[in-house]
Length: 111
Length: 114
Image 1 (cartoon, chains in turn orange, brown):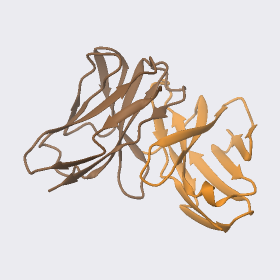
Image 2 (cartoon, chains in turn yellow, orange; image 1 turned 180 degrees about the vertical axis):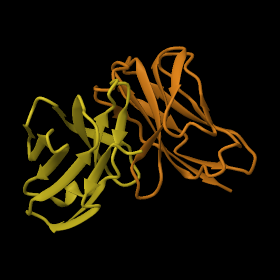
Image 3 (cartoon, chains in turn cyan, red; image 1 turned 45 degrees about the vertical axis):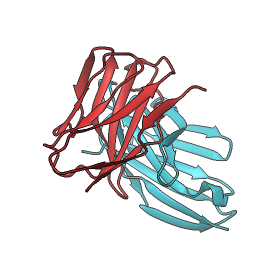
Image 4 (tube, chains in turn orange, yellow; image 1 turned 90 degrees about the vertical axis):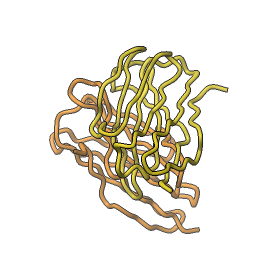
């Protein structure tokens, strides 16, 4: 079963707009990660946020984590056509042995 | 040039045939993982290995087998028992077997049935 579920499943925006993707999970976690996947390629790690952190920034990326609501959001500011990709959240299991990935949000940024 | 290499990029399987997907890493990572991705879906864990000569089943291990005889290699065999093998297969590695680490992915192998 998938620990994380992304919302929305698909998002289409214009270049320059902000894109927000949400992730909800079911059980307690040690950390939550966001990954990006270009079509037909492997995943690339974007950012990791620990359970005791509430917000983290990396360039145009901003991630928030609300452990009381078991949810996280990924904000991409000033989007570019090159940001077109699928974005996945991933959470660790209680034993810390593996990651569980959500179904992903497919982002399309129109030039 | 460090990273994870998966081969082949495309693979075709005939009915009743076993096929093996290769995954090699030169990152000196202890842990390696195999995932299956169906179209428009997320990743599902097939097998993982936290250390050489040891591996554990993931969520969808039936019809698959692995070995971890060397630290840098973690091949996946799709057996004839896997009745629906058509999918995109991704291999990943992380520094330690502790799942809270960042995972690094290969470019994937796309498997189709003839």
